Length: 306
Image (cartoon, rainbow, N blue to C red):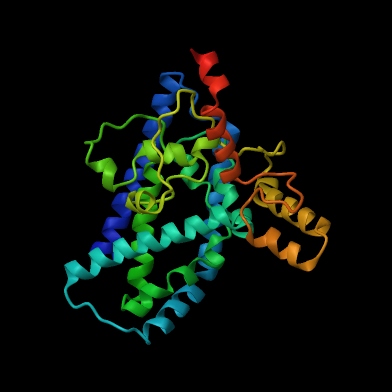
């Protein structure tokens, strides 16, 4: 039997823990009749994560080659192992936040990322509903890590570990955590907000492991609305076939591009935020949130509430 190094052992333990937690959540949800799981939705989640796994395997060599080639031109080398891994995890998590932010604020990237948000359920298998085509371009967001002096294999390992943590916070169960923990790290409560389609929650809490990036850059939101969370998209596709889940936003994007009056406007549809339109017929999340806040501050609304 081949000897496993510490990294391989850690990955096996983390994957095993995720599987055990998922099965436990399924059982508790069924026993307590919480209806966190729905059969077709769960099967779709597993199908999409299998597809993402295949794509990851297909591009694995290219990803490693690009990172390794860039690493040859590194600017620094960190000799101390503790500092090396601490800095790598922190920077990798920040660059993931950047990748995730772009996925929400540029429609062409949202067309890829929307798959992960398309479920109207929220459970540990929702984390499996991967952004399937993201591996085709994700590597380019991590090139700064190679230039700083982190090896390709270590970057890929750090990404895998942070992804496993990101899966674990996809739960509706209230996990008792110390108050300080939620100031630094992403919690299930934070990530429930991220998957919500309630207007004030849109495009919030995009961190994978650390929530400090959202606190620093203004995308943080507590789970504090009086109404319950509604999971999924603001405009949920009627067809929940896996192929439509993957491509429905691409179809909508290309339809909008086709109707755009000129080339410049066509480009704007690709790179402006989701919801942007040249004629104002649709609205971005920020516009919806601004209108929501104006309604909340309306004297008429306050007098009715009184």
